[in-house]
Image 1 (cartoon, rainbow, N blue to C red):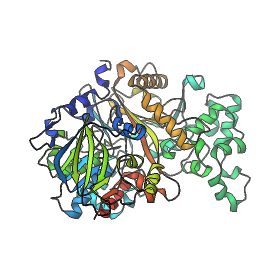
Image 2 (cartoon, rainbow, N blue to C red; image 1 turned 180 degrees about the horizontal axis):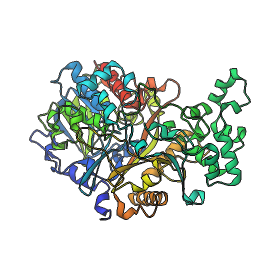
Image 3 (cartoon, rainbow, N blue to C red; image 1 turned 45 degrees about the vertical axis):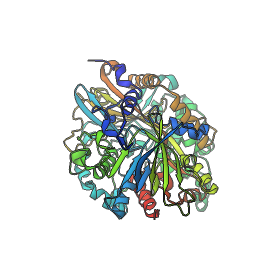
Length: 611
């Protein structure tokens, strides 16, 4: 078998080449039609998500206060609406604007990444000629049966059949292959490489159909590679619960909401073993948007952290099965197809699963709606006074050059905290409110492998991995639709998903930890990630069944420096999202929330605020 080649991991070089051949027509209009036909970001591997170069101009503006971008080309482009941010919220804003004002309204969507969709990122892995599709960010349409009619109508209009997932998701896959939740302890942290058939937390329960622990708490505590004292402490925690708290029943809810989970572990159960504390810290992951060391007891209980009974992830009417093979990139692609019909063939979202999008169609001058990638907004400013202005000027950087377009209205569908740096004249209170909105870093790494015999041998559906950068490794969701077939046997190629929720130093605040982890994550090169993944998979899987160089075909490291929205203190979220003249704010941060339905609803609100 061929080894991974360096060519697979060009850190954005192909993207730079693609954007550098952007040309301008006689009227000065950017024409993405000039892109090379091979421009197709989903197939790029290596560093993805917040890929190298995607945030350079935004960081120069926010961190260094840069304002001199050289001469600006004022394009003869005027739009009814410019949307800053091409994620699901931005795409939905364009959709809602046309629904409200007519399909003839001209819209430009700017995005700083090389692909549309924001966190809804599509990863394609070609493994010995076999294409495996995966997600690199937003996974699922969460709780669709609780969605507002606005969202349900949008999904129906773009061709998403929610009932289809009931048959597309293979609920029996994990049972047929006897794959469940386990824990992998690594030698570097725990003294030996060992897989124990128990997850020690609730996190694996969000994968529908995954089998439960094969060991009792007593057996799992004894098999954990921690000290004898640590085994005793671990068992006390596993068999513990809120009944152990010396608090009257009537005071319990207030107590668990105001007291630290780590204090609960140390003071109620006497835990001081570093291995057990590390297991506890990494038992919430992205479900808890942070390490459990910065959670209250109530928050830790709600995400099923170490020591708490399993909790239902979603109610029985909303199972966690509404995944396209590429996650919510399937939603983003359906929105783009609705806005720009010639971008791909297919009459509904399912028919788009295997469609190859023609990126040359995204920014054609004749389009009513245009999506302009690799374009970072660096200044959004009213013409004249915000209260009476009829136009907004939008400056952005594409291929190291500054351009300007004009719009009657602008929807800011990007991160809240960047808005004060690029929207000129914002009221001070609104700017301050936007700046305190927090976001947790997140990393989804998809690994294309030639077989999954090692996962099968050890019964791994998901492996909690408290000793490694990626704290969870799991088989991708078993979804087949639109002609795409999920892997059938352990001898077939597939994608393994690896989840990392980077944390900072224990003892720091949540936001301080996020800041530290974010900087560290972005400072790493692909080689750093590859070595980490090599050590992780090689230590976890049986040597006789897994060889990294032989069996790993490709890796996509999807880094999201600003992942889940956490909101800000007090009333800051509401204050931050207020309309400012002809500029409104969409995005998940403005809810705050972190799912596709929320992104759509915030887009709907923002469009309705534009008059």
